[in-house]
Length: 146
Image 1 (cartoon, rainbow, N blue to C red):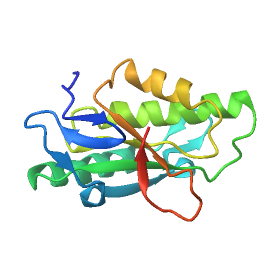
Image 2 (spheres, rainbow, N blue to C red):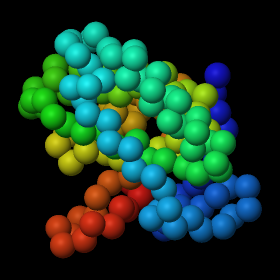
Image 3 (cartoon, rainbow, N blue to C red):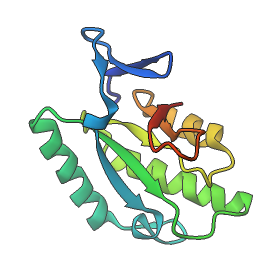
Image 4 (tube, helix red, strand yellow):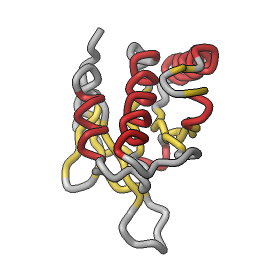
C-alpha cells in the first residue's frame, strides 16, 4: 500500500500539497524511536513496540495531526555494516506504519554517514515521506527540511 504525499518542500519550508498552505513544523509531533528498541538484535525486530507505535500514529491520524519519526542512534553506528542494519531497522519500521497518514516523515540522524542510502531505501515503498535534519547552526534547534 503506497500513500500519496501530503507534504512538499519548497525553499526549506513545508507545505501541504492539497491547498499549498505552509506548515509550521513546530506543530508536528516528534516521536523518538530508539534503534535498540526497534532492533533487539541484528535483524530481529520488536513487533510489539512497532504495533504500539502504529496505534499511536493512528490516534494522531484520527485527530488530524502529523508526526516526524525521529530515529535515535543508541548503538554503535560506525561501520558500513552497522549503517546497513540501522537503515534496515527503520525501513522495517516504515513498513509497519505504512498505512499511517499521520507520518509526515523522518528526521535524519547526524550520526548517519550515508543519508542518501537511508532516504533511497525508504523511498522504494515510502516515497511520501519528507526528511528533516537539524539546522547547520549548532546554536539553533530549528528543524530544517532536507
